Length: 440
Image 1 (cartoon, one colour):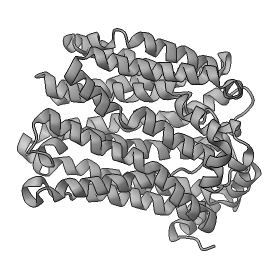
Image 2 (cartoon, one colour):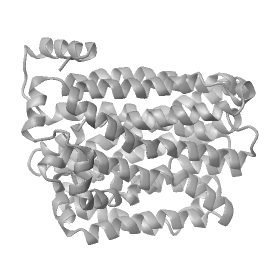
Image 3 (cartoon, one colour):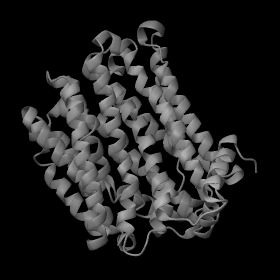
């Protein structure tokens, strides 16, 4: 097995910092997990925001604004469909060449696809080929995200101190609001600082360059953990080693299916308070996007507080209880959320703040919720597949479905979509008693 240059550098710095070895601590795993997740979610939100503000005008200008945004959201979903393909391919790389090689290749692919979008020519220069390239680059991002699974979140939950599993389970989820805050503020700054035409010509490209740079930093931070002998031994000790994808699906399809549907409420809520409301406000109101991006960034701070609170509540009342109660609260919220979003600027603020608090409470405990339900042989690959499918079913098509339904039947229909996710979570938790017991 050969090591990449990045792996060797990571080992050398790690050895210099720790005198050739160090005791594995959950806090150190947490740092790597948060950095990695924040990087991935920054990429995620940079693309999501561009799907609303940029691509309908740059790549799909031949369509009306609503149709262009719907098509843009369809391309957005391509990455979620491609994620399982990435898991399949990079699991083979992991088994043959090691986790460090897999992670390096996956994150360079993610960074390369993201940087390629920054150089994407618009429709006015190359016609429909612009849309074709966008789909290809988006698929590349999805394949890379499937390969970027490093097992650290599962390792963190399994290695948490007694009585602190809920606390350590919420730590990886902090990456989502952190990535959203950075992406929203960066776009808000560029839109505010540049004339509209300059922003559409070249200003929107800078966040994608930043995403590439952050990926490099995140890669090194994660490699510093996963390639060290101490962590290699810990992964093997917990048997967090990749198993063949086909074998894993054949043996554990019931657990994978239950795990994919258990977090539907939080994943549906995820897009209902991030991507979808930006598209609705931008298309159907006269409110400037900068203002809503600032509201989104501030609301994400409330989301961070709620994620932290979810860890405390889970350790006191149980993770299953927190997931179930938060899903029920999301179901209740779906009944009046559309009215808030359509009630002007004050309603938008109430919608975003309430939504992010509920999102934080539910999303904070959705990470690795079923890791210990898998037999140890299938835990690593099973957890990766579950994550892929949960994002695809719960989040990948959410902006497209919510905007399409709302434009056809009014905002009330978006509440029905959110309700369906909450019901899916409650049914999954109720049906799978074994899963429910392991979440406690």
